[in-house]
Image: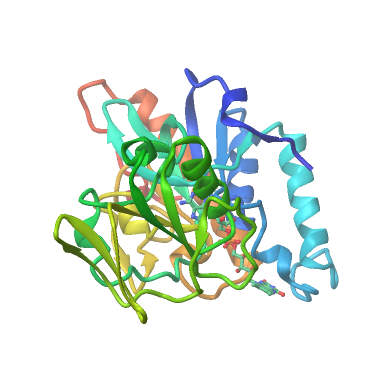
Length: 315
Ligand SMILES: Cc1cc2nc3c(=O)[nH]c(=O)nc-3n(C[C@H](O)[C@H](O)[C@H](O)COP(=O)(O)OP(=O)(O)OC[C@H]3O[C@@H](n4cnc5c(N)ncnc54)[C@H](O)[C@@H]3O)c2cc1C
């Protein structure tokens, strides 16, 4: 298995050729194909790599691995990634923005630079809570690490869709002096310090502003707090990359896995059905090969010219 790196282990000055968001079958396939051509590539994953396919009790239809368990298949994929010395960082990409020389990829902890981005984020199933979107930046935050300090000595609600939220909530309470009401929206029993108040599991009806506070509407009545942190394991593609086309929750791509935004490609479940490992792996490879072509054409283009969109080119 590859060493999962802490971001601090990486040279942040590196301008990666490609950042791949998502370490499922699609992202791993894309990264291997990029590394195979000696380009620099970084993989980000918000949870453990291969977490979805790794749950399969048996995979009957992935060629060459008759009835391997998802876990066995995941080990083989990660071993391959490791052999190619691809760095894998467990951080969630929260925003990707174009800059003069490619992209800035912001995670919940760091910022990375890339010339190309490949989105291999799987299916995004979570819908926002009612009122959530309107309050972003006005009391609702997705990054305790970025905004937690603002709430020292104040009270917040922390809404978590997975146990990964427990660490951030603990840091808010124990290190930043925030009073935390923790609302777990998952089945596992939360394991938190005593200073964190755990609320009964319940999806709030809505969030709204009231008397300078944010109200979290619960069955028991509104919980009034100074801020709300929402911890999601994934980010809707439209929120991740501004201007990307999304239809029915899937990123729109052409047959070259190009999204229409120069330098942004997508692969796997993120682009639509069938939700299958072999399809994800194939699309990851197509995205990588087109990304490599894009990098070549970008290097040839005069500085003043927009790099061409390889989608327009025949493969
Ligand atoms: C129980 C089960 C059994 C299955 N059995 C089979 C089978 O037998 N055969 C088959 O072909 N398929 C099977 N599947 C489907 C298969 O697992 C998926 O089609 C496949 O995993 C899709 O790969 P992907 O790389 O596109 O997405 P995923 O595997 O979903 O990987 C996406 C990754 O992106 C990460 N991510 C998301 N957002 C962000 C972000 N903002 N920043 C950083 N990382 C992010 C996620 O944490 C995740 O690890 C099964 C699925 C399940 C759940």
